[in-house]
Image (cartoon, chains in turn red, brown):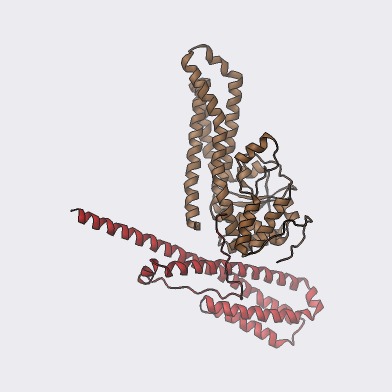
Amino acid sequence: MTVVYILIAIVVVLLVFVVVLYNRMVRLRNEVDTGWANIDVQLKRRNDLIPNIVEAVKGYAAHERGTFEAVTKARAAVAGAQGPAAAGEADNLLTAALGKLFAVAEAYPDLKASENFLQLQNELSATEDKIAAARRYYNATVLRFNNSIQTFPAVLLAGVFGFVKREFFAAEAGDRELPEVSFQP
Amino acid sequence: MTLQQQIRANRFRTVLVLAAFGLLVIALGGAAYALGGSGMGVLVLLVGAVYGVFAYVSSGSMVAKLTGAHPVTREEWPEVYHLIDTVSIAAGMEAAPPLYVVNDPAPNAFAAGRVPAKSYVVVTSGLLESMSKRELEGVLAHEVSHIRNRDVRLMTLAAVLVGVVALVSDLLARMLYFGGGRRRGGDSGQGWIFLVLAIVTILLAPLAAVMVQMALSRRREYLADASAAEITNDPEGLALALRRLELDHREIQHVTSATAHLYIETPLRNATGPAKIVAGLFNTHPPLAARIGVLEEAGGFRLPDDLPVAPDLEMPTA
């Protein structure tokens, strides 16, 4: 009889263990999804701003065709990117293209002084700060999630329940490391 | 300790604070009963219960009133709102908390609110005047971390519940002083025991209340610092802000022992004499130097011992 009880106890303990691990992985995966949604919101916001900026610059420098096309193309690439890693790369290309656009704008003092252009520029840089912030959160959640499904004993269950490693949103070099701060002095 | 563990621990401690408040009200009711009869006892219990419910529901706005904070709109402070927006996004918050200001030259900040969605971040006008953008970002990240880690509900409740316990026991002490003699004439033996119990309760109530609040604070400050460093990816910015707070010896007005634990650094450190000993006993914050030390170790940098005190000075980055 006692053997049966012990076996039942072991099974119960194992079940509780599996449930706890499973819930943890689900919670962390949900955080990753939320983090990605946050990035997506900011990327869309920036993509909505870009046509206005291009129009504003066109008004003064219509002949800089190549620069406009590069920006428009990069913008479309961000919108159409599949998955975080691809979106991150497209995002870097777009940032570079926008950098060139603003370099062009530098040559036109009237444009630089225009109220409209200044406002757009401010909004864009505010949105870029937010993209950077959302990326920090997202990459931190991915790190936590990936660690949780790749470490023992969760790794035994992750495959069974269909938890797969998630991609980082590609970051600029040096930005990916998160500081390790201990909670105790 | 993970964030989830911290949130769970905070939920548990919230229950403890509420239970401690209930016990204190009952003890005070007993003391009132001993002093003023059953009518008095019931009255104290009733007032305590009604206040407890009221305070639980409206604790957020009560703290704003206690500290003299008033809301600031996005139009008034676009740059600070931009900082708190990015910090909130990096913290994974659903929305950025609104900003409140306390008009006070001493630099300090805190967060309050019962639920994250209704929490707010308070800064003093002195904080904005003395900190660079980078330092301010660190301070805001620290406060947003308190909201995300669910520290604020506990701290806010502690403020409003502790505040009233001190008030009520103060009231009872006065009653004891003025009206305690009446009952003494009748039954001699038991009356004295009750009286002694009553006095002990009256003395212990504020003490117990402060102990509750002391249990809240120290660890969570380290945790909020660590979270802030992760959020901004800039432990040095926060360390610089803390060093600036350390070097600034002005003290914020409108601080009582009920609200001291809310602030990013303890506002009661300039006490002298006996008050200093008491402040040390009930210190709600770890020393700033220790907190800076932890950040230095984490970020692998070392701050100079002294910072130029000039406001709006951008710190050179190491």
